[in-house]
Image (cartoon, rainbow, N blue to C red; front, side):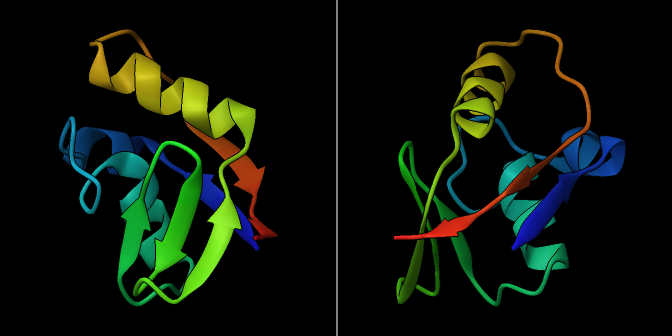
Length: 79
């Protein structure tokens, strides 16, 4: 599944949130019903799980630490 994190997701996201950060908002726009973002796994409604790619982990770390982040795309692979 391709996830596109846009500037709008970044602007609307909440730092430190597992359900309202930019990646969660992008996952929701990609069709997930209830995305939950963890450091290594993204789940949809705590049922379907996907690995978090390194680029997405680094984005989360930078975003939560008030570093400058940019829109990006990544692929989710099944767990």
